[in-house]
Image (tube, one colour):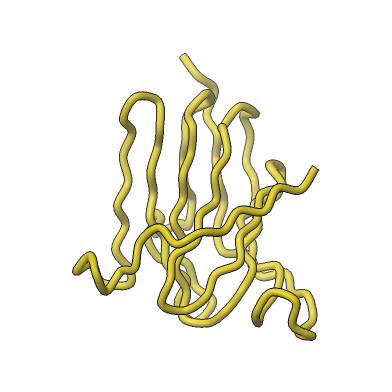
Amino acid sequence: MKRVGTGLLIVLAMTGLPGWACVGGTSSGVHNLTLSVISQTLYGARPDKIIQFTQGEKVIISVTADEPMQVFLHGYDVATWVKPGAASTLEFTADIPGRYPLMIHALGDEGSSHGKVEILLGLVDVLPGK
């Protein structure tokens, strides 16, 4: 099943955060994280490009980018279309432990004639809950 989420969550210019800023945290079982993709490179994750969550957490990832693209998380089959100047969200419950690739799946606007791509942005680790 493919779930695609879109929506304006945060415009970084309005928050005063630089494009590479990472804002994350857990509260009440919800993990919020802000990531940026600049020149097809992920910012906001650890230097090794690994993003960790704990099994059972509800995850909300806000993604911004400097060009239009589709960001896709394999394993959870969640995707979002990102447009420059606006944030889009990936939401899922981290219920399956493991390591999953976070990819750019398409460049260009949703529905454009641009071809599909497979560009690895980073890895999402879902650690077993305690």
